[in-house]
Amino acid sequence: MLSRVASVGRFALAVLSIAAVLAVGCAHADEEVSIEPLAPASGRVDPGLGPGTRALSSGPGYKASPSWSPGGGRIAFTVDGYVVDKPTGSGDRRRWTTRDFIAEDTEWESDDALMILGAALPSGTEEMSSSLYRARAGEDSLELERVERDVSAIAPAREGLIFALGSGTRESGLALTRGAGKIHRLYSRPIDGHVTSLSLSPDGDEAVLAVRPPGDPEISGLHTFDLRKGKGREITRLDGNQEILGTPQWTEQGIYFVAGERSKPVDSGGSEPLYEIFRVPEEGGAPETAPGVGEDFVAASIRVSPDGERLAVIGRLNPKSPTNLYVLDPLIEDFTAVTTNEDMEIKTGPDDLAWSPGGKSVAVIARGTPSTEPEVRADPADRLLRDFYNLYEIPVGGSEEPQR
Amino acid sequence: MRDVVLWLSGAALAFLVTAGAFLLLANLATAPSEKSLNPDGAPGGSGHTLDLQLDRERLASLEPLPDQSLDLAVENEGDEQLTHVNVTLIVSSENTALSDPRYYRQTVEKLPVGGTASVRFEFDLLAPEQPVAIPPAANPEPPREILELRATTPDGNSTVRTVILPP
Image (cartoon, rainbow over all chains, first blue to last red; front, side, top):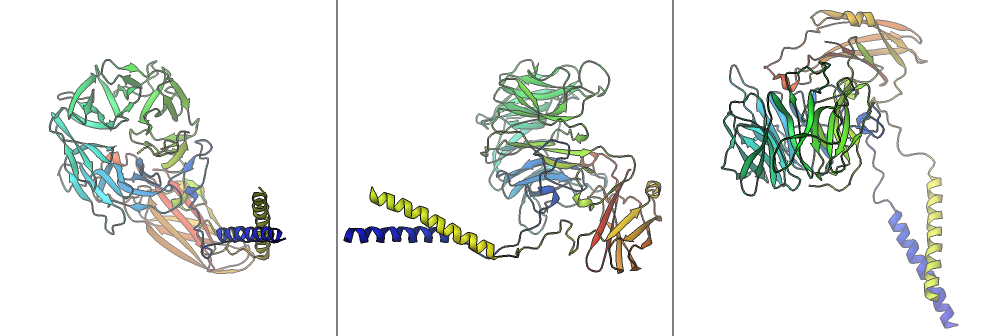
């Protein structure tokens, strides 16, 4: 009898304690909070770039150089020369630079600091020379802290930034920043020529540089630079008036870059495309046309994924095709169209695409074809998407974990 | 073994009791606590009381010069007479770095149900001078001019038309 009473007691105790846990767990911690209305740019839209595409900006302004924050929660970009960033979800823009400053490129140093390559507009006949600046979020003024003068190119590096120094044509230098914009290492051995762009190898120990050799009008040299040993070398040089376009990209399967004859018109009707994607082994040698990419493909810009295994490519299947986003898997030589858009103009600047830190999506800049007649819309200008160049996040699949 | 069975059945019973209690509580709340949100950010109303009509031919004839004029029709599509309808025109450039927008305002004193009022704006469409020479890489295209017209009733209903003029 006693044991029966004890069992019933235990049963009642179990029911009461579990109900208490459930009730406490389900209760609201606070009063209801009001939900901010989502900006139209924060929802999923199909602006002609395929399902799942999301607008990351809206309104007028010539946008360029998107860059995701390390945590992926914000995206920075330039608008008509000044720098802004905004949450990748809903939320307002923050402005980082003033109207009298022209930014060329921007990269995140951390989730609350940006490194900006640009210059204050010269007064009178003064020549414009780019410098590297650092800006912190949350500061009231738009003041920038100058890190170094005469900087020609920047790229994100492990725990900081790598940049090329030198405004002359004869030689350049490299330096690394780490933490609070401080120069962590300045490489003493110079690089012959002018470095116009650079990026890191997937392991972050080496850099690949596009270089205009001394006395050469074209950016025809491709160098690698070992950041541990502080030594670099030229791995290939393009012949004739071929020029490297944009930033070379170091993948697990070699170094890829876009090159072509700058002087040749785009729609010349010739069988040879204007710009192609080339691959060269890390050890160097003659570049070959990237395997897997069609022979008529006209490339505009490429960007390696955070894991170094895929390349996002903006270009056209042939000179008369619309511009689209593709992903190349160099290992299996698979080239897949991510967008099959016919009526959006995807921007083709060398820095106008960026992978999200997790490698799941790519940010591109696009607009609808501008009309030659006045267009009337039923929304305020700052909410319009297709009428102006705006940023879009396009899902491409891949891992979810940030790589940095 | 018996204890385990007791604990399991106790857990299931507790879950059902708690779930039922929360369902009951949820059904007791008949009115939603949140107001529906207006995506236009207007203080209230649906924004469909007014209509703004523009003449496309007149829009096409606008030139990037001072002393331009534009007529538009404001129509009351609601079921109440409106008074003091504010009509604003914001002239800005597609190049957001160039200059601050220019604002113009007119007021329609009375607008009967189904009635239409004509509003004329005289404004400056001269492209603002660049304060300094901006390198073409920052924006290589000639910017378009943007006219944003908004009619707003005193209770906050508004209708917007944005006109993008080719360069």
